[in-house]
Length: 306
Ligand code: MN
Image: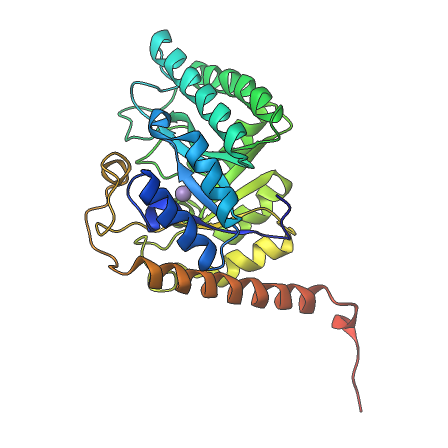
């Protein structure tokens, strides 16, 4: 599917907690009707995804998928236990196959370690092991034109990539042409000294972007200042997906919601939530483009004495 610049996406968990045919139809049709270009489908348990049904519904509603997951403690690519690491690589291989079969453009998330609170820092050898496995996963993904994004998340969800700079370093270690950094405002708000500067310094290595509020509810109702982030994205001419992520105990995935610590009811009306997020993102994209134009315009230095 061909997109313009910055296709807007929505994480499926804003709409449904599972992926039965009825749930998949509800998620895909709602995302499409709300004006989103793509839907991010979580793949924590790829065996639960009906590939043919998913592909058919995506086609029916004319919307593209991306896929994401966090590995678990029993599928941790960075584990010193070779059986666990092998299980992680097999899981990612399966997810790449699903991505190929449903036409996914991106595979992203915490795919380099378990998505969990670690009790110790990562060792150099475990990071190298993870990067080596991901270089093989990237090669398989490249064969199906899938870009791979390593999501930089906060310290309570991984011990490998907590900052954009660490994400860039990990991608360089992976060394694959389709490996990119996946940033998320929710996590950057916790870890980065300067969110906008982190985006600018990631530059061309940025491949995927999550918009999440500080409490993961409605955009603009928490403590994140989104304007500088959007201006930084405009400054580096970022053209990849902008995907809204929000979680509430209103919609529960028995696995993912618990990993993410979704204990509170941040909202009850997912339809209203995602309509608001669409308008919020569009307004910020437009404003940031205007700011960028004013700041780079040839007229910037014009002297306008009367
Ligand atoms: Mn995210």
